[in-house]
Image (tube, rainbow, N blue to C red):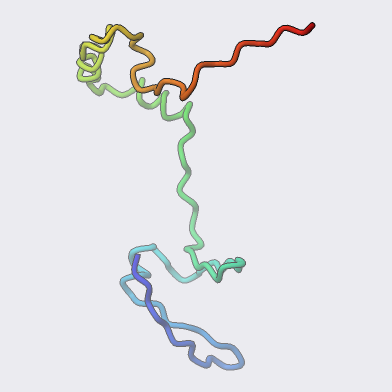
Amino acid sequence: MAITRLKPARIGNSRGVRLPAASLKRYRIGDVVLMEERSEGVVLRPAGPVVERLSWEATAREMAESSEDWTAWDAASADGLDASPWGGPADRVAERAPPHPPKKPRKRR
């Protein structure tokens, strides 16, 4: 995102800035803007309804209801990593070996 330098102009007893038309269009800003004061500065955003984000449950439901073809994912299970050629368990392929062997508990006298 580009930083645009705006110059405050006097509007009656207040001051204001003119926002570029391209920014107004990009962020769908109409007649009303919401201003939020934060510790790092001022945030302007459109006053319209906020786009609702899907939850994980809603996303999974939507994916299950879609008629999308997921057979390409089956190819990943045939990638040959079920058994590693170097003899280690397949579920620990990316793990590093511990830097030193674990210490044995000492016997108390």
